[in-house]
Image (cartoon, rainbow over all chains, first blue to last red; front, side, top):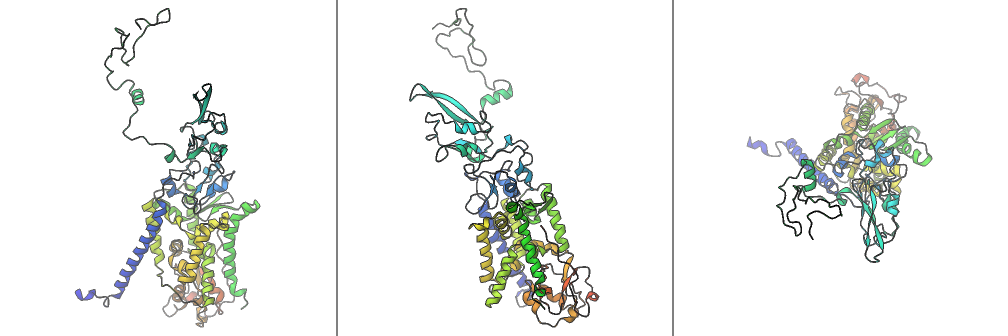
Length: 272
Length: 296
């Protein structure tokens, strides 16, 4: 058998082996080259159309046909080219250029043939294209004490996704700050606020969800939520501590003092 | 033979290739919507979905089962090319074919050497490679580099007018074919062509060397064929009792051999007309079969 191992005795097999190695090399080189750009993380500037699957699943589903962009009535959606950021050929939009007008008929989702834009999204108000974040807290006119309010007013979910939170302006001591505050649960990421921001560079920007929202450690539990779920406190009430002036007053299981009001407005048993 | 007669299938092909781009452009340019999307996936007249089955396969490898629209679209495409010839996609639809044909033509005019030796089987390895890469990365991997869809997208969206991916990738393929390897891309490397070639194994419409008895060995067909190994088994098969139909799945049904043959040896036929007795003793006067219908 050993004599049959030479290439002269079996050139066919040798050629096949060489071909296999060559082919395997081609597969390896190609696979590696294709794998590099596909491993990109979320981009800060590029937002996906409404209903887009999470970025990893989107990459497996979007065939880059451009049907969503073609059916976008406002030309919001563009197909990525080299240098745009998102994977080549995939749809995206830049809020500062053209934001999403939040069509109630969701034409982009309807046009998607592959399910990369989830047909399960039927109400545009539930879209999660990203989350607006007021990044420019040193430049935002409202933070400076003015009443710009433009982001708040253009928000399609005014008063829900963006509210103006009142606080005291200690600088003038007689004015108020009206701080635009984004509520991520309601924000669709349409980008109208970023588009409308009057600054040279928008102080409020829509970021992909992954970048905009922090991520609590998985082991964290919120005590008040757990309590609500359990229907009561999960820990023993704190031992009674003596508070000056409250001697002899009974403490309720929640750890608060039970005080009875006196007819004169004061509290019984409270002796300051 | 007049020039027109010796280029009729070439002209029909170019017309088909132009039409495949034009039907996507009439909408944005003139408001007359025929097809939307790209070769990756499209919708014609608002009802006919067409999807590249290779995309569906890569998506599946990446872990995503596409919605029925895409699956139906892919099934229609599969059925269509199983009828008209798998790699008819390459020669009648694919826009890159125009580019590589130009490179091959220039090579011939410039009298250039063959260049790099590539194995034709490399494309099948690459086809396997892109499916594996899709599975490994969870993305439709080939779309990061696919010259076919990148060029078509550039043409139908107008992004070819900017110095973007369409220009870069198309130039790369052109320069590779012109400077490095004769018919390097389409004949040796392109995994999309390899995929449609798999369909060619069952495809009905085929080129037949039906008048092979009239062949005078002028070699014109070999010179013009992008996959010249496919011709001999049919053309020279009489002695071995092989039928006249070119059965190789590599044949792109481009019809150039029909065009250039001064003895009208070739014509379009079906794979079922492939007994040695189907070959006539003399050349045919005219092509009886119609061209494969173009896909929109």
